[in-house]
Length: 189
Ligand SMILES: [Fe+2]
Ligand SMILES: [Fe+2]
View 1 (cartoon, rainbow, N blue to C red):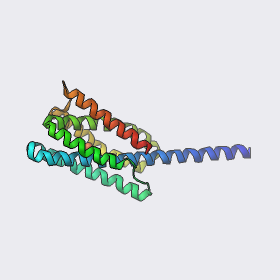
View 2 (view 1 turned 90 degrees about the horizontal axis):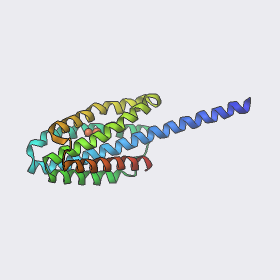
View 3 (view 1 turned 180 degrees about the vertical axis):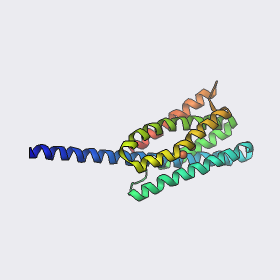
View 4 (view 1 turned 180 degrees about the horizontal axis):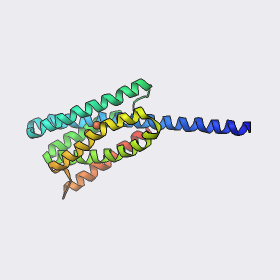
């Protein structure tokens, strides 16, 4: 009987530890993703100021959101003593390059890129919210607080021609693939 109690206590502790690791991983990936989003918008804004000035106010507004999202996850990571993702430099360099590349391609490419990324992110957030609602109310609230902005970013991009038709379908596919890969890699690092 004693043995069985100890066994169930051990499995309970293991389950708790698995939960903590899952939550840490979620917060770390989101922190890295926001860091990448900031780089994308910053490089798009730098180029759009010259080539597509009418996009700049919208991009600036989205950048403000991403900065707020980043601060939310950054303070959670610090408060909980969670290390940042080892793939952070990849998000920063890759994000900057993707933003610059799409802004140079044109206004439509900017919105295709935004719609593709935010679509991938929103699918990912749906999954996170489902996990966190049971495991960690504070982390759940953090993810919920950014969700509406990310959905609005996707809707706005689609409304501006970012649905990715014709040849732009290839760009959408590439951006979604790269974002999905970066998220997957970040869960391992
Ligand atoms: Fe964000
Ligand atoms: Fe966003």
